[in-house]
Length: 420
Image 1 (cartoon, rainbow, N blue to C red):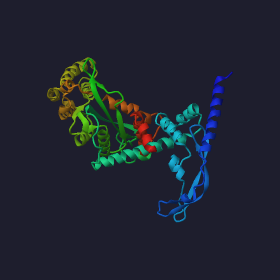
Image 2: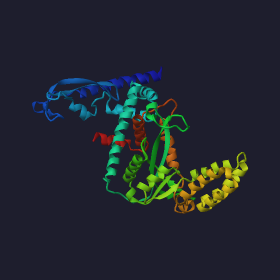
Image 3: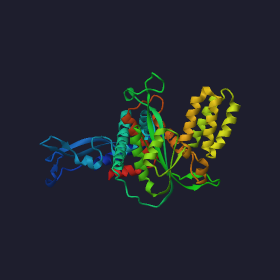
Image 4: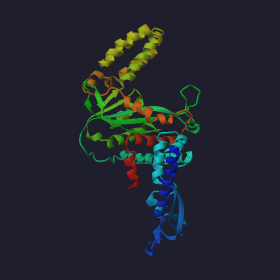
C-alpha cells in the first residue's frame, strides 16, 4: 500500500467535503423587503438587484459564495455587504488563505511559498497571488504604523498604563537591500561615478531587561523584542521608532537606554526623541575603529597591530576615552602620512566620549553592544537580500512591515484587530 498516496487522497476528499459544507453555509437568501435598500457612499440609496455568486478559495478547497448585490442608480456603484462582513471584499481568497499566504510570503521567496502552499495545505495558488497577498497585508500593517507615526507627531500618544519597566532599550541600525533601477535614479553609488544599486533600510529594535546572569552580565528578557523598519528618511524613521517605544512603555521605564553604532543619523534621532535616555555607542564598533587604524599604522605587521590595539582597547573598556584621544593625536607627529586618518579617528572618539563610558555602563548592569539590532538586520531584513531579488520601495516596505509584525509576535493581535 502506498500510504502517502492514500493520505493525500483522503486529505483531498475531506477538503472537498469541507468546501461543499462551506458553499452551503455561504448561500445567502435574498434580503427582506425592509432591507432592500442600503445607503451608498454618494449619499443616495442603493437598491437590491439580485443574488450573485463568487468563487472563493478557502482553507479547505474552492467554494462558492452566493450573496445579495446592491446598485446605486445615482452613481452606478455596486456593493456586496456580505463581502465586507466576511472580509472577502475585492478578493477571491478567504481570510484563512490570505493569512497562510502572508505567513509563507514573509518567510520565503514567493515561488517557494506557492510550492509550500500546495505541499502543506493542498491548495494551488499562483506565485503572483502569494506576492500580492503578502504585500497587501504588509501594506495594511505599514499604513497602521504610519497612522501611529502621525499621532506621535501630534503628541497624540497612548496613556502610560501597566507596571514599571526596570530597563527599556532602543537600538537602531541601517542596512541596504537591492532595489529596481527606478528606485535609485539620481542616487550616487558607493563607488565614484557608479549609480546606486541599493536603498538603506533603517531598523529599530526595542526590548526589556530585568535580570543579570551569574557573572553580572545583562540578560535580555525572552520574547520582549519588537522591531520596526522601513526605507525612509531619518526624520520619518525617528518618529516611527518613537511611536513604537511609547507603545512599548517608554514612559513607564525606570531606566532608558539607546544603543547604536557611531552613525551620525542615529545620535541625531536619539537626541531628538530619546534625550532622557542613557546613550551608548556599541563597544564592538568602537573596537573596530581601533583595528582599522592599527592596520594603517602597522601594515603587514599583525603582531604590532595586536600589541597596539591591546593597549588602546584596555583604555576603551575602562571608558578612558580622553587617554585614547591624546594617544591618537600624539601619533600624528610620528605618522605624518596618516595625519588625516588619525585625526578622523580622534574626532570620532572625542565626539562620542560620553557614550563610551563602558566601565560605568557595566557597573549599572547595562548592555554595551547593539547585537539585538544587528541580528535583526540579518533575520528581519535578510529575507529581502537573497540572490536575484530586487524591490520597489513600496513592496520592500510592505514585506518589512509584515516581517517585523511576525517576528515581533504581533501578527495574532493584528489579525484580531483586523476582524474587529
